Image (cartoon, rainbow, N blue to C red; front, side):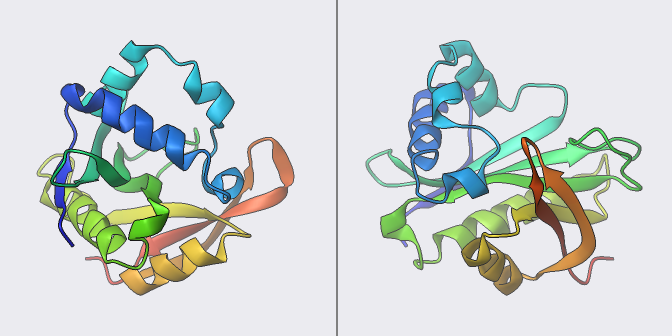
Length: 182
């Protein structure tokens, strides 16, 4: 693996935008992401600057895999959810990290890049002093077996909780949590 895994800054906005739009064209995008290419392609540059900088209501940190030429080959974002509130508008019982936006370019799949991104995201969550994270979770669509198999290899297990997929009440997203947390 010839990549640097690092957190993004506002200056990375163009690469973040290009990678996200590429991800939204992936054949699995409809079950991997809640947004669509059509929606995100017309977002203003300021949206992408804020996203790369981690702006917004929640503490967020996006990690990318950067090639030597500066191109981005993968990404995962950590959203920090405080007890009492989660990104779906529900009630979180504890301060937790929620991993979203997982993507690795096709030619890099199986290279260890996704694992390196997850390691960085989890280390970030574990390293926070405030809030102290006691739980790391993510959601996976019921039909995304490839992604769920990877998450299980990293140490995630189903929590038993599921939520309807927004816009498709006939499908669910399963919550997975990182096992053996203290």
